[in-house]
Image (cartoon, rainbow, N blue to C red; front, side, top):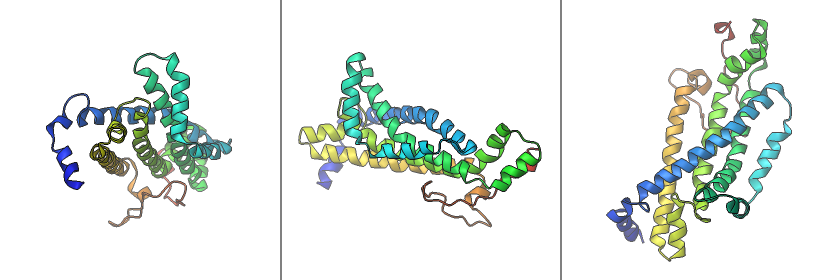
Length: 253
């Protein structure tokens, strides 16, 4: 089996054309990016508002409950409902991105809310004490302190979308999932296995890229880097108990 999979990867026919790996990879990345953008436009502002004001915390629990919804069933229902009202590729793209965005919202919302909620109250009080407005406290104190958990939510959402986007090929969408769905449909199990390996490799690559981005945008003090040592900054937002060093608000006064 391993030899047949290696033969599949070394076959030039699988690396060109609309059914080739580069084109399917581009499609998968496009669907993933569009999904994360839609989800972030909803979840991140909402998470900032809930964490900053302390209102409507129940929305976070409600969003987490959505994870229990079977994604494939929801995708098929959305395709049957929206598909007849759309033309061309939109009949597959819109339902798929909509359903995947629903899946991406909970980790983004939870990470953003948890990050803002975990900010040291002393940092907020100090910011208000030097005359900062509520908006300034949010953007100059709370958001910088919340970045580790916000980025953890982004990484979690990205991995979930990359993995789940494979089922979007079931109703007719492209992407790397086509190799898995078509391989199973035609009994080409080496094709299905190759598709699964490609999805796994993409997930690992994106996780590494986002880890580098997190190191760039998050302050070393918030990552727990002291004297060359570091703490684990990759924990799940729902499991972390951050005691991050607050931003020095005097620098913003």
